[in-house]
Image (cartoon, rainbow, N blue to C red; front, side, top):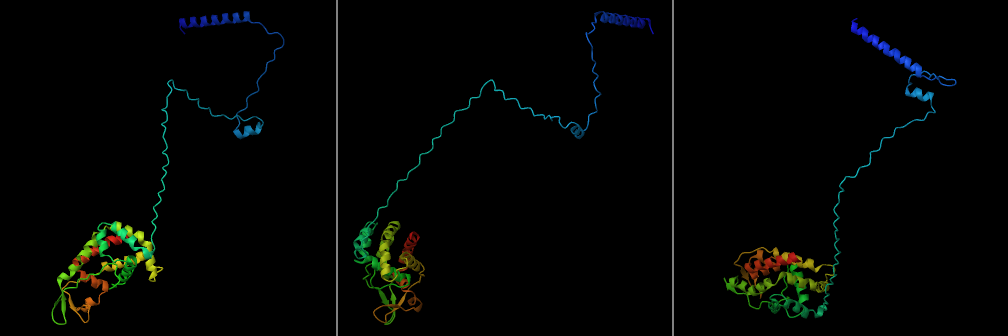
Length: 295
């Protein structure tokens, strides 16, 4: 070992000796008997089930989860917008509208009421001049019922009959041909009829509906709707096939008959449409299609 190392060891030994001398000089012995407690040797940690078996009375300590610290208010408070006041709509009270009750006359005294309603229509005055003078509703009901079955009454019509005779030409003593001008006799009637406002006339029909139904019950149809019968009559007219002329006629008695049996055997209403001509028939069908859509 070097000389410097020996000197360091000697210096440490001197300092240690001086320290022991100092502690011995300043130490005070305690009074009385001093009991020294020697702690018992610590046992090795037992498994959880063994420890519970040895000390069952020891309380079990459960660790509670720490609560989250309360939220610290921010330095600048947030001011929420004031709620917008929404006004609830006031309930709408619908005023009850009471429809005017129309007092219908009796069926026997209904003509003036019918004429007054027709006069209010566009071209209603012209239509009245073509109508029968009395018992309009009863005659109309009978007329419609006949047409619904394919018939066509010769009397008791709800309109005035055409008084102008049908113009014909002679082929020989027993065979005739209908003149082309024969259709023009019905032009005025058809033109006035198709000029009537459909909606207004149907409104009048609905007003008079109870009287039509009463007149229909009088002729034996108490449990049948007259609306259905009117609809059947209109559809029967619309089903009429077009038959091209010229139309040959025979006259075994006062009335002319069609010489062609295929025409003569048609329903009465279809033969009547042949008499008014193809142009008038087309106008009539167009108007009836409007009526049936409103019915």
